[in-house]
Length: 132
Image (cartoon, rainbow, N blue to C red):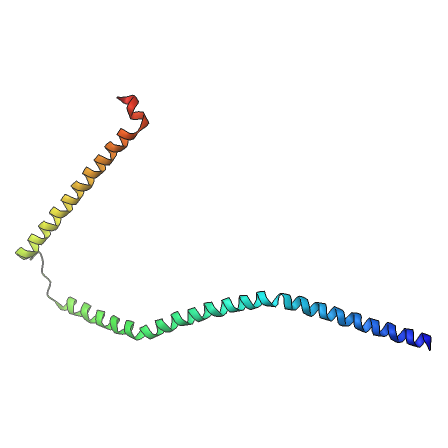
């Protein structure tokens, strides 16, 4: 009877050791579950944002198609206009001259500012004292 009881207890011990090992494995699996959940939630958030962007683009598809059609119509209208070779009006010539004058004034201002800036750099340079 003693041997049977010892055998039964050893079998019980082996069964409990296996059960303990299974519990440890489950515990390890659960320890990593939080990280996997965070990763899955980040993926879901990114996918929702992407779906949102795509739905906006899909909604604008009709607008874009309509804009393309309007643009094509305008291009056809422009192409159907008679060609004018060097037939500028006086207003267009005056505007072109004003634009050219403004460009020259801006270029002159930039050049003057660049020269003043270069002069300031030379004056501030430690080597400039030696040159004087």
